[in-house]
Amino acid sequence: MPHTDTDTTRPRPAWLFREYEPVGVDLGTPEAVAAYDRNQGTDPGADDALLDRLGVGAGTRLVDLACGTGSLVVQAARRGAEAHGVDVSAEMLAFARARADRADVHAYWHRAGFLDYAHRAAPADVVTTKAALHQLPDFWKQQALLDAAALLRPGGTFYLWDVVFGFPPADAAERLQQWIDSVASPENQGFTRTDFETHVREEFSTYSWILEGMLERAGFDIVSHTSLSPTHGEFLCRRR
Ligand SMILES: C[S@@+](CC[C@H](N)C(=O)[O-])C[C@H]1O[C@@H](n2cnc3c(N)ncnc32)[C@H](O)[C@@H]1O
Image (cartoon, rainbow, N blue to C red; front, side):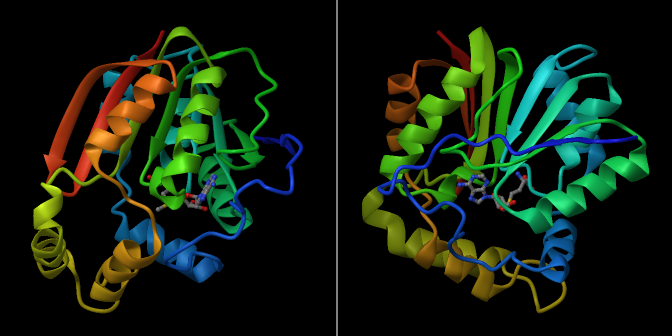
């Protein structure tokens, strides 16, 4: 199926965060993107379970911010949703488009960032972002959440899943080391110790209580917050 591919960005003032220069683990080559997709354990079944929870069906307008390799967008398109994938990475979008081609579904792909995506369609029913908001420092996360709220119709759903810290700040060093020690895989068998160390050192994961305040200030009511582990959390929100 043909894809609609638009360059939907807003003007970028000189002071805007450089979101096209991603931080942390390098995902800037087709090989790194393919490895990311394998390591992330992309699972259409899990995507479908999430889409069910979010009530995504035929005609739902969904925007997945920082869509990466596009699995959630493609699964949404398969069920007849108007599915938009937004990402700063041309390599990620190329992988996502190929996935949509294989599934023979139509989706809308936008090379744009959290901070400059210009949504030209009608307001979205559902906005999602998974494993990505941590790419922005906290000040810019707040801006990104305001922008995400502006994409949604009132009452629309916002879903956020990310590396989010739920442990007490005083325990950070111990908890982070425990996390890395327990999840790191050997080379070529998943995300490595170096990947997780780089995440903590160079990316911007933050505490769940900081995100709660940001979500509220962005105009969301938090319907549920689940701390999936001391280092991962999800928020299901409604736009006021
Ligand atoms: C770890 S991947 C997650 C991808 C996908 N959401 C998933 O769940 O597998 C992070 C993604 O965020 C994208 N990204 C990084 N900074 C971004 C930004 N400011 N705006 C949009 N996408 C961004 C990267 O290109 C990458 O595709």
